[in-house]
View 1 (cartoon, rainbow, N blue to C red):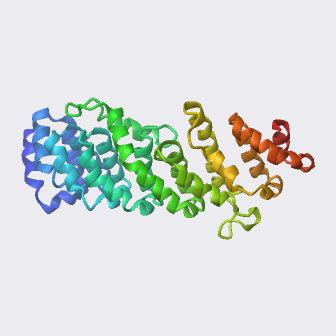
View 2: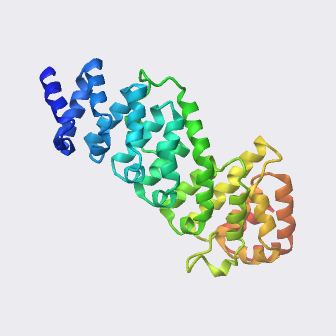
View 3: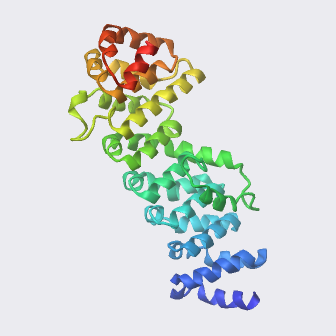
Length: 339
């Protein structure tokens, strides 16, 4: 081990550091060496990690450096990632290094300035990338089983309980979410049509609805309601209307279900359903009842149990009951029972 350390220390400032074989040896060494030897390697390597995170073993080395580095080491590491954050977030292995930073670095201020600012200024590019989405989802809902594979969670859990992270992990995650939420809400609104038209991106939209809408979600609710209020037959840029599109349909239902939770927590809370009923013209519902998915959205509104909302919707649909009875699809049947 002493001989290996001697050889590795000579390689850390040379171009050969970029080779995957060196990454593998470094990873093996950090896994088995003493704490003192590991600290020496981290101190020598901390400014060069950005060169090795593109390989599997290189990313694991970087994660070990983040988990076991001192406060000073972590500060240097995070600063070294500046200008490389978007590229890292889109890499197969590099994106997990960012997750390790979110898990371990107590100084959320420097994480915000060095990493999150760069991510939020390029949100559209990140959200529409397969690996970039995972980073955004980790900021919104860290280790949530609906968004993160168990193998990835188990890997990240290796850094839990390290000697240099003093802040409670939930506190650290909440601080990062508070920073990123306003920018995510804005990006969500600005790119709404494109997100709806991209099924793979709607998982981020649903996570934003559940965890990332800022304290004043009115703008997001208003923009989505305006999109829903468009004539049902017009479709979305040549595609299905948002209430008929599978991904858009799920997003609307997600918003309505969150309304139910929001109303239970705070009866005077701003609700998407309220914006929806104010924005969609009454005449549009005669078209809605002809569409199975649209009727399921109406069912979902009635199931919120928010009296003000449900009574208003029943008044709108009452003149249409005889037409709903003639429909043969499942949504109409359930809607009739709810009415």
